[in-house]
Length: 369
Image (cartoon, rainbow, N blue to C red):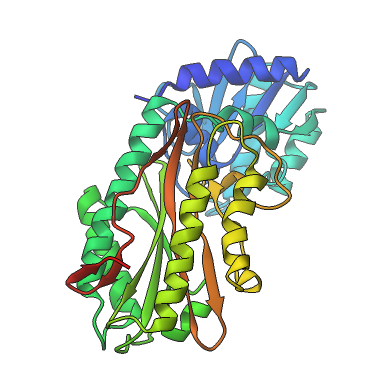
């Protein structure tokens, strides 16, 4: 069981410290974070006052006073925006927040909900940084769930290694990944991926398509799956034949960059300094201009969270943060590769969470570089 009541108490203290009378939370990830309930696509809100809290939604949230709205009206049909906004107004009145200074997720809040809150004479202040500060350190229950999710990714990579053969399409691989991970989870999951075969791997955000694997291709598979409210995010590269000298060169540079990042990833180190360690290896090898994105990022209820490992990020890393390292090299017309591992920062230094080997992966074979 996640310590939702402790999280709510911490939020109330933070709101009081910030001089806010209460808060309205609207992102599904934060509804889950504070209640343990995973909402569907219909709008849900948490309305939090110092002594009382209420949820707004089309169905009850267990353990919470829930003010319900119907998502279907016999006269007007599916009028969810109006129904949910009217019920949000009711919840604001019920918990005594009319006319108060409120925290809200302004980048996410709909214009309709914003107008509703403004009509209640509420002044709104963005909660983005405050909510991140509460989430940045993972508690033991979160760590356990994330470890389980990373282990599921490890299992999936073993299946992918066997499935990658000349003539297989990216769609086939994607379907196999999703099917096997749902089977392991015992039901549908949220699954996204970057998957680049051969020259298509030059796009770091390549999505699965009808393209067929050819002998000699390198294939990078980046899976960011969400199970039970939390993500895992790992990447491996697979080969369909003995790697060429160029493929070995690029792969070896990425392994070296990953190790450099691991050596830097410690409590008290700035995020930008970890990025410099990873990026420096790739730049020294002559491929700096072919590494287009961050060197890694934190994650949890969101697939990407602060701090990002980028040159401008001066946030100091702390024990209890979970981050990725993901060096990549992408060469137009040739292809690309990325390796990504996940880590828990601890007082003692670092714990790697994924166990699938970074040896060169050829179907049915695992070779050391």
